[in-house]
Length: 359
Ligand SMILES: [Zn+2]
Image (cartoon, rainbow, N blue to C red; front, side, top):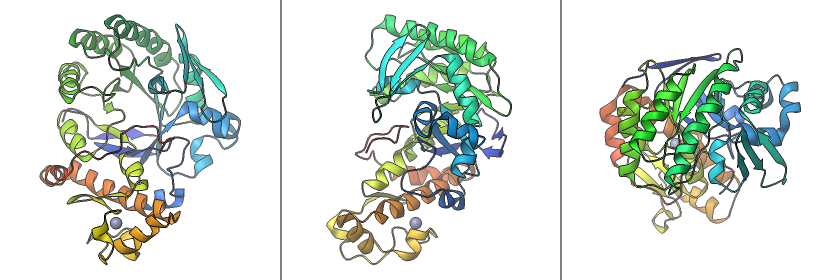
């Protein structure tokens, strides 16, 4: 691993590699904040554009930032929203920024690097991601090369707008061309950032391309900087890419799968909807001390799911977050064990994303 094993944030140090559960508007879906704190989660990822729409900056300023609003004791990372270009929230990408449309309210928000900096400053997240231009998979070569130039221009502005107690990460683009990736890594690491994300990956490309880009890009980032692979967080990928030097992961993997009836264990994932759990009085995972495994058998959970009881989402998510905490502990301190656990996971059916607004 090439990064320092810790990231020093205003609310304390976090050990790397770290997994960030997704809290698009500040909260993790289905689980109250007190429980998130109790589980010991040290950092979450939220979306600064979504936070601007709801609860809105007026409220976040009154609460002296997002932690005052949500009650989370750990650190927030905030995304600038660049990744949303891949989704329908985008209205238009312009030379100086991105015009977003919120799906729910229809409200339009224009985000430039200056505005993104200002928004994330008011949110008071511990780590702010720069606004980047992230073209979809399969775009023309010229589109990728434009995104490298544009992301650099935006990075120049964003990196100089410092906010006290906030770290700022640059984002490396360049599509699936090794030269463009090298160029972007060179340009971005010439700017004053505290860490870097590898953007525009895991957007539908085959794994060989993801790996090629990481192989070409990672050695070009100076060793002292933490590297964030956005939107990736299944156990297999975490083990593989943390070996390659990635220190920060995020994904809806544990939370969205939980809501769809998939729970994670050291023996792989379990589909609670499966008929074989109809009479199964064992907990999801023996030896797990989470609230769900303490009080609920798989039979009970399956019934709650079938009856669409709202408590199911809470219970399944609590276990999956507890699992991720334990799994990341192994990734940091017992690589062999982490590797053994990761092997038990094959890809689940639900797509990953770091936007938990859907599904
Ligand atoms: Zn459990």
